[in-house]
Length: 237
Image 1 (tube, rainbow, N blue to C red):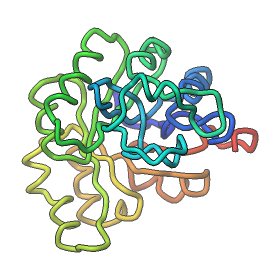
Image 2 (image 1 turned 90 degrees about the vertical axis):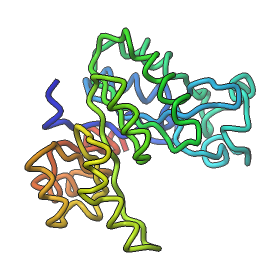
Image 3 (image 1 turned 180 degrees about the vertical axis):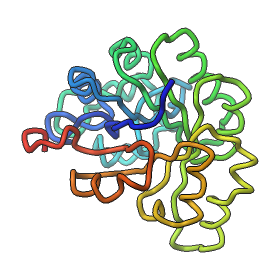
């Protein structure tokens, strides 16, 4: 699988109006446009694997509850923003996409590392399409590397409250520990020389590009790109 030169739709092709992020509608739009998709997965209270970004439901569903405290059946009573879209399961997304475009799965931070990883790996085990898996959590990345042949990535960002922690979380020592197949780097630090050095060994993705101008700016600094509002045309804004 070639993981260079990709323009990946961050949480699908959405506008957070009639087409919410991480919804089947957003992924269907990306599929119809032949654009790879990125999505987020986490577990509900009853260990159902859902596609959702936030740990709290307030921003997208209007109720102040944590995903891990709510059952899947309870989630099905909620709509995403003002749409009629529901929070999908990873299984529903895989059935929708059917290998037509690449899927880039981010496993969200969790205390139940093995539970989350094993459920994701079970879902994609017999899936015939291209799939990437990645996480901010080093122990998730390390676990995935030991249990799948799919490309595994480490997400890296900066932490404004601690320069020392920021440096460690993007250090070569941590990367050696995780042994990722690719890195996904926050655009705020992608231009740093030590980050660029990693490209000599493994592909580097940049996130999140928000418009064509940004894509042109960061294009020389990465091998693939996670983007909002793809394709860059006014009718999708």
